[in-house]
Image 1 (cartoon, helix red, strand yellow):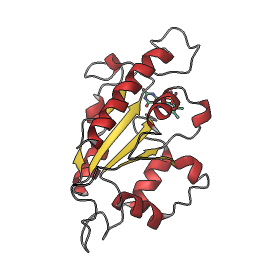
Image 2 (image 1 turned 135 degrees about the vertical axis):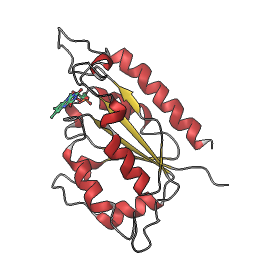
Image 3 (image 1 turned 30 degrees about the horizontal axis):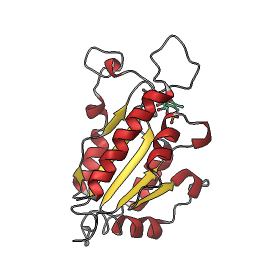
Length: 188
Ligand SMILES: Cc1cc2nc3c(=O)[nH]c(=O)nc-3n(C[C@H](O)[C@H](O)[C@H](O)COP(=O)(O)O)c2cc1C
């Protein structure tokens, strides 16, 4: 059996100004069997090469969607990517629509809000699992297996006070766990 391959699609509109996603990306981007892509850098004009993206999906087993939580969802290029790349006849029927069957979907997310805010009765009312349902159901419709998301809360720009804010070292620890998970995945 061949080694499982990972496609890591990072969606961050300004990775140079990022703290969380930058630390996470730097920790995992050079792993063997991981194809790392900064999708905003590839498509600054949002003109997605659909066939190229679909071929990348076909060539990998685990698709990682790594991004900050924006308005309880994702940065807009990821939505554009879903709308364009997950075409009928490729990702879902009618037509063949089975090209992604059996692949794994992993969402890796940073949020500004703390974990306690994401619960019934909390500041944001809903859990992250509830808020991620549109992604989970997208994976379902494509016949993909939804893996338990990696969620790193309380990631704000450095220097913000008055709110819980993970230090760079805290984020690095999370990045090491993320790296370990990806390494284990490639071991089958
Ligand atoms: C446009 C925008 C929308 C945001 N929406 C949310 C949100 O809905 N929930 C939340 O917890 N944080 C929200 N944040 C905070 C970001 O999730 C947080 O700054 C980011 O995850 C930190 O990662 P980074 O250092 O890689 O940018 C938002 C930030 C921006 C700029």
